[in-house]
Length: 417
Image (cartoon, rainbow, N blue to C red; front, top):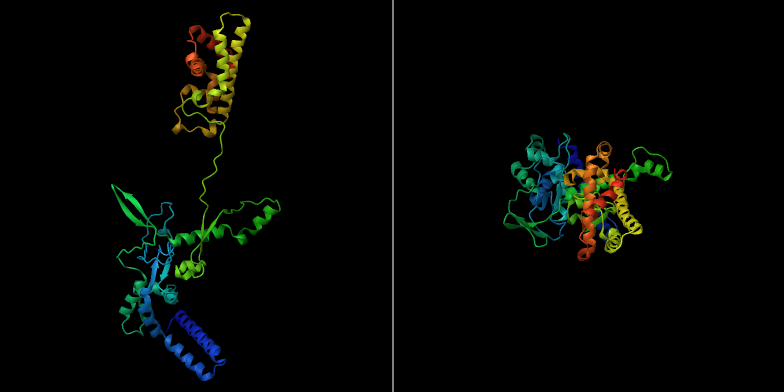
């Protein structure tokens, strides 16, 4: 007994053929009589009886190619070897065509589309005809026993699964030179349509209004909604011969010739005004213009021939302004230390690390050793910065000036903690 699914499929083909032919006659003659209609029905039944249909499918199965990477998404007229990759590989978290059980199909002409539909009919045991043919099952052998040479029929029908080992490419397919050791391979780049349309399916699920309707309404009414919902913006729609999508592939036809592309714009990077130093606070946290005026004022005072209380106060006031700037920068850097410090890329000295990172707040209070080293470091930086700003005009500073720098810094000891 013929499987009900096959019977239904063939009867559907007969009904459509009769309807089409009758419409043609009515369009031509204005009317159709019963005898003429009977001839059309008998002709359709003969065309779509199981034996004739199987022979038609076997004869034209080579015009149907199962594939995972159709070439026609690069160019509709491209003719290349059909790539059918069904080898299962370990899922390592990457997007791979092998993780999908779906398959795409190419047709040399749209007239052969019913052949593939027939081969994917699911029989009463839950398996489709193609699967039965691949397993050479007894079920389909009995169903197709009406054909004289079943083995030949099976071989011809299985031509839809490409076994062609000849590699044929096309100039219409985009090609790239790919470096391999000291040489290059010329690769033809083809799209995995099963991934393209799997992506579209997932995007439509995420953006589905029906699924998220209650949550969208809650947001509109400014009500709390546990879990929330997601929406993907800035999608790009790709069209693949939308007027004739079946010319590209079966999946393209099923998706009305449209696929989606996710936005690939780079992320917006927040502009930072404060950076946690990677190697040296004094080099990375200061710009020359920030302290240049103070050192130039100091230089004028150093060149003065006389010495009085006003000159000394002016000197200390300029030094204090520079130290205030250091302390202000210190607090800014400490505020971003948790977010911006990365141990694997940092070469900051232990003294500056203790001084600047918020994790060392307790250590800063318990110990004074790091502070003594820091005062020496700031004193050295003051001397070096003065020489840098004044360049060749700079006066050679002696031990007396360095000691005075250290003395002024020492007055800010508590503020540096």
